[in-house]
Length: 98
View 1: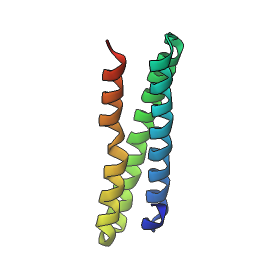
View 2 (view 1 turned 180 degrees about the horizontal axis):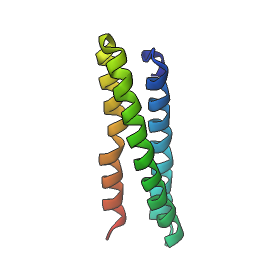
View 3 (view 1 turned 90 degrees about the vertical axis):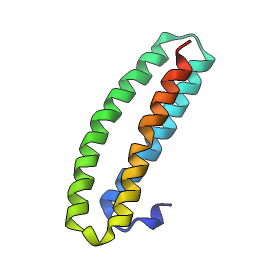
View 4 (view 1 turned 180 degrees about the vertical axis):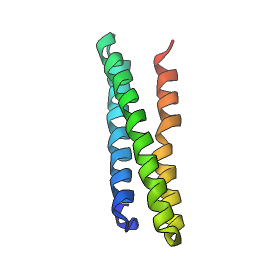
């Protein structure tokens, strides 16, 4: 999928979003299988760090979009992939709350 993106920042953003999705999924599944509150704490810390990181990435992507406006489809697809992790995180939080 990385081959679809020719701009460096788009590739970086998609890699970060994919890696964050995998880490978040592993943390959620681990929290579901165990009764350890420490894992949930790691998940919340990870979510807060991901939110901060995503705000920075979105700003960089918006600047990149303005600089290379002719490739708007690529930039929009990258923004959607990055923003898809937020509803998934909310769904995972709902799974963990009884």
